[in-house]
Image (cartoon, rainbow, N blue to C red):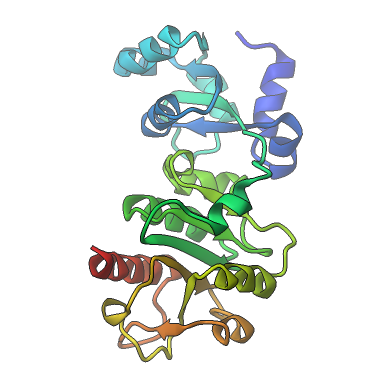
Length: 263
């Protein structure tokens, strides 16, 4: 049984400030934990209930084989640390890797031909950000850039909505960098900037791509800021009966059609 101090830390991992302080995430559910085991992220400890141990013996064995500490909890105790309304009996702590100080330089000069990045312009709902990360992972987006003002990846709702995709997708947090200046930097390196807007006249599937591309999507209320649209080489739109498409849904539609064009 974990100590009260350990349980206190686990309960605090519902909040970003404690995630940052302790340098770890609390993840839950068999799929999320398997994704973490498949990744190069360091899992510190796996917690499971008796029922989950019987239901997911392969996950317990994989953790043991990797030398990860494991501990059985009562269902009541696991519920007390869970972030979910319906806990599945499995939880784990995963270390947050340090920021790569060279990541921006690598992104500016991609080695891969036909690169497609996604730039989130102040998408504020963590559920939307997490869902977009999941969609981008499934559609082979090479990197997601989160602007200043975006819901953070360390928000528990964000990373749980991503369903483990945070372990597979390249993520670059722009922090307090000016969005226009950052995009100008990419444009100066030959990236084609593709804006998205309800009034966009070009269909995504008719968009000519270059070797290096960035799709820019905007926040839930205002869309992409005008000063960023002015930088774009083209602005795409989705014909719809109304303008109320969820940002994650519209992002998925656009990426899919750009990918179809990209081949």
